[in-house]
Image (tube, rainbow, N blue to C red):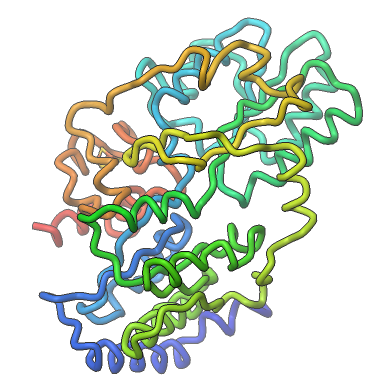
Length: 380
Ligand code: SF4
C-alpha cells in the first residue's frame, strides 16, 4: 500500500536505527545522561510503543511523553459539566467514543448513559447535526473536543447549522491549541527537554510556522513527524542531528502531508467561528494563557455554554484530582506511567482513575496496551 509499506520497511528501519545509534554516540548520550526528546502528540506515543521504537532506539535516547492527548488534558470540571448537560431530559448529548469512559467526579459519560441519559456516540459532528435535524423537539449538544485536528470539522458544522437555521443544535466547546502548552513546558525551569517530535495531524492544519518560537526563542529543535515507524525514526534522527550540530530549527519530516502554511480552508473556518479564550485549564498543567477556543458571539446560538448558562465565567468549578492520581506528572513528562503508584493497581482500563488510561492517545493506555504489567516490571 503506497505511503504505508515503504514507511514500514525493516531494512530501511535498520539503516536509520544504525544512524540514530551513531549520532547518539557522537552526542555522548548514555542511559545515565540521555537526550530527552518529547513527542508532543499522543498518537506518536502510541506509535512508538506499538512498533517497539522505545526498545529499538539506544538507551541514550529517552522519550518524554507530552500533553498532546486532548481527552487526557481535559479538566475534570468540564467532564462534570458535560455529564450535567447529558442528564437534562431535553438533551441528546453526542460525543466521540474516546470521551465516554473519562472519569468525572460523580460519574463518566458511559455511567450516565447506563443510568438513562441520552448519550450517543458519533463519528463526526455532522452525525450530531443530522440527529438535530431528525429530532427538532430535542436539544442536540455536540461535545466538541480536540486540538486543531478536529477544530475545523466542528467549525464547519456550526457554519452548516447556521446556514440551515437550526435552533436545536449546540456545541460544548473544549477545543484547545498545541503551541501554548509547549511554551508553558519550556518556561518550566524543572523540565529537561532537548528537542521535540512535533505533531503531524495538528500541523496539517496549522502548518509549521507556529513552532518557530521553539527554535528561535528557546533554542530547541523540533521536527514535525508522521505516524509510521520510519517517519518516527527519521524524525528522531533529524532531532539528534540538530543537537549534534548545535542547530535549533523547525524541520518537517512529514512534508508529504504537512504544508508549511497549513490548510487555508480549515484555518479560515476556525477564524470565522472561534476566538481565543484569555486562558483555559489543562489537566496537570493548570491555567494556560490563550490555549483554548470559544465560539464567537455571532454564533452564540450554537454555543452550549451560552445557551445553557454554563462554563467559563458563569459557574467556574475547580475540581481536585483524585487522591493518588499522577496524571499531571505523567502529562508533563516528570514521571513515566509506570511511576504512578496507581498504575495497574488502583487504575486499570477496566477501572480507570485518570483519562490517560482510557483515551486511545493516553500514555498510560499505551504502556498498558503494548507493555502491560511488563512495563511495570521493567520499572521495578
Ligand atoms: S495510571 Fe491512572 S492515575 Fe496514574 S497517571 Fe495513569 S491514568 Fe493517571
